Every structure is written in C-alpha cells, then in structure tokens.
Image (cartoon, rainbow, N blue to C red; front, side, top):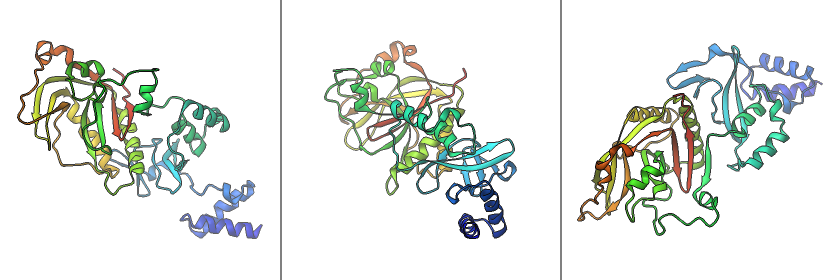
Length: 337
C-alpha cells in the first residue's frame, strides 16, 4: 500500500497539485479501490472560479465557449474538451482520441454507442458522457461529406455542368453562407460557377504554417457554438450585379443585401479571433455571389432576371459552412422563428 500511495501522489503532483492535495486525492481513490490509471486528477471546482468573458468563460487561463459547450482539446492525444457544469460545480473534461479522424458514419456511430453503453451515460463529469453526446451523437449537425460522395448518392447521376472547374486554390479554407440551388440556377451563366458551389464568402482563413486539421477542428467548434446561439435565419436577396478586378479575369458577381448579414459576419469573426483563428484581412467584406470570371475587355453578361422579378431572388439563410479542399462542413442555426 505505501508504494502504491507514493506512486499515486507523484502522479497527482505532476498534474499541478501540492503535497497535501495529492495525498487527499490518493487516499480517497485508494479507499475506493481505484487503480492509479483510474484516478481522476481533475477535481471539480466551484463555478464561481470561472470568469465570464466576451464570447464565453475563462477557467485557469483557458477560454471556453461557455459551460457544457465543447471546444478543441489542449491535451495531447485528445480531440475535444469541455468545461462541464453540474449545479454549482465545474470540471474540465477531455475526450475523444485525436488519432481518430472523421468516420462518424451511422454504422460507426451505432457500434460506438453500443460498446460504450451511451444510453446509460448520465454524468457530465465523465469523458464517456461527452464522447457519446458530442462526437458520437445520433443527431449530428455537422455534416462532413466529400463532393464525390454526394454525387454518388444518386446512381449514375451526371456531373452538373460538365467541364466546369473550380477557380482558385484547392486548399483555400473559406467560411461562407451557401446559396440555395433555386437561386443559383437563376444566376448561372454558361462556363460560370457551378450552381452547387455558389456561396457568399464571409471570410478566408489563413492556413500557411498552421496545422490545418487542428485549425479546422477549432473552427468547427466555434461555428457549432455560433450556430446554436443563432435563433433566426438571415433574410437575404440579390440586388444587382457588378464586377471587380481579379488577377487574370475579372470577377462577375451578384451583389447581396440582407438584414443582419454584416452583424452575423462580425459575430463569427469575433469568436474566431478569440480562439486564435487567423483571418485574412487582404480584402474588405463585399457581400456577393461569384457568377463567373470574364476577360477584362468583355462586357458584363445580360442578367435581366435580376431586374425583371427581384422577388424570386430572395431567400432565408439558415446555416453557415466551412469550405476546405473537397469538403463542406455545415452548421444549422438553432432557429426558433
């Protein structure tokens, strides 16, 4: 027993506890017949020890979106962390294996939930509870589907607008509002942006010199939080067309107006910067949908539809997305009206 206690105390002290606290934790744990590996060195604390800050709470120098709201983990080997709260007590819980990527298919989800008895996990201070609730939930709002797989969902479905190719860098990381297909179809021009790839770019993320997977995980956490607290859709409409210089060919675009659009972008930008996400400041924000690219000596295409029936170019945006490589990650708003 003495050797076991000594090993336990040394282990707990390495977690930042003083001698007396380490002995108290180990004495209680040994009385419960827990092994050293089972001992939870992250003790619950009073909720008052967390500081309310803009966009969330800060606890022991780490910022969280709020109580019981997950974010990316700061611990090696772990994917997520959460400042869990039960009553007036709080505790930092790390969960999820960082080596496990994104195979959250229905089959994988069902297998995990069965193996870990997710229906019985009720303790917010346990890693199992959060893994079941967040990473392996039966109703995920974040959707990670490669474009190629979307096309394969309908057997022998032809590629839309065959011959179209994306314009720009493959590795751009963009935060955007998607454009509904019925709006895109009215704006589409031959050889222009594919209907399914029209978007309103809110901001570009700078990825150079950064771990892209870690950066993506952080953005997913932030957008998940922002989407949950966004309780109304954005009423948007196309108000006209324009063009601006772009290296090579000019960008021909549809201008977009919308109540709350600028405020929503500012809100997203604020939270991303709070978590250290580097946002490009190369361009000012101009709400628009890129219709296509045209040589600088050519005139603008005729887009009479915009002026003939502008009411057909109005819609409600109810989600925000990350576009990166060949993936789109969707976060639906928690709309109540």
